[in-house]
Length: 226
Ligand code: CA
Image (tube, rainbow, N blue to C red; front, side, top):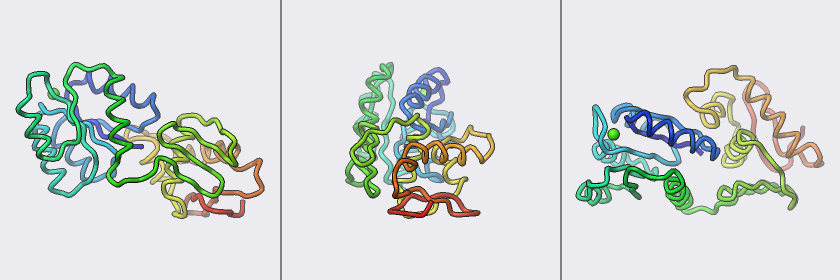
């Protein structure tokens, strides 16, 4: 899952981004309101964490414009302890939750997970493709009822494939979604991770779920040829 963090205090953004990355989220950071709005309306995010006091465009303006653009992404507001009046205004403008600074990372994580669970549309936390099952909340993966242990990146890759089952995803799409903007490596990283994933998810089963679409990318579906 991909999160946009709009925060001008580098100390805070570094601390939050590090924690979220450890929790297997892909995180993009914008250091001012305008950059945040640009990202929020250009890319698909599962959640936006938005500071209120920001240069160029303040958080409540960013929020109003996000909602005006009809972006249904959940938004978690970060606010100074004394800005109670602002809080009310921001809920009216479409914020989903808020957190007062300073906060413990654990507290942020609880709220992030609660918002993601709710999501823009009601959906189950479990995604299934044939006998492969992925639970977004517990982050557990099972095939034919047997637990499969994945690394953080393997998990993110599988989640992205399964969320788009039946669709062909290009290497660029995969990199943009599973890695983040700061990723500047070679595209064959995707091939390497798909190989790891196949090794764990497909190799010991007769029915191969992950397929290669030559010259395009990868997809996951019911019973494909290896
Ligand atoms: Ca700030």
